[in-house]
Amino acid sequence: MPQEGEQSLPLVRSLNSGMPINAVFCNHCPRLVRPLWIDFRGAPRAYEDLQPGTGRKMTTYVGHPWMFRDAETDEPLMVNSKELFLPKPAEGGNATFANITLPVYSLKDRALQVIRRLVRPEDYRRLEIARCLIEELEDQPSVLKDLHRMNQRVEQHLLERIQSQEE
Image (tube, rainbow, N blue to C red; front, side, top):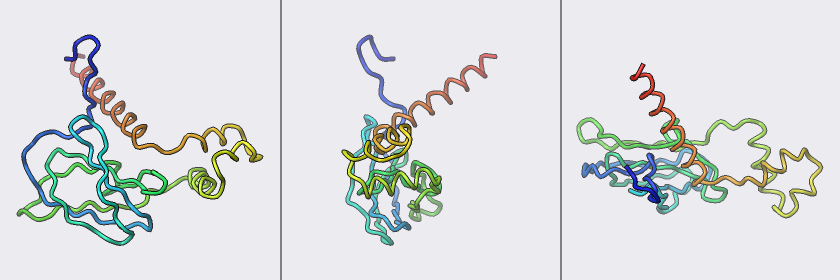
């Protein structure tokens, strides 16, 4: 339990399992992908980008979470249909695959991505669109915001489990 004035460690972070595994990061999307290892303090650590249609063998550890982002826009990408890759041992010592793909974007999210690519941020407020959309354009994708949201979800899930056990 943290003392007064101390910050607790985030829930989404690497744990020291000491169990190495072989993983293959496979970029199945048309974007340049930035793998991010979430370290022992919950901070993202960037690894070498993956070109579209390529892969890379990695040695990682059980309990070490990874996220994958568009290297140019910082938009989140999916890995094995999830936001986070948490390696587990594969049967027979085989490699564990991390298949990186584009998420299914809503029409609004895709339109915001295109506008961000075509319009300079200082010109967003000159667009004749609803103010709420301008605010969403200005709210750029961020791995730190996404990690914070994931930590809140995990914490809420744990609190709900504790409350249901007390009843």
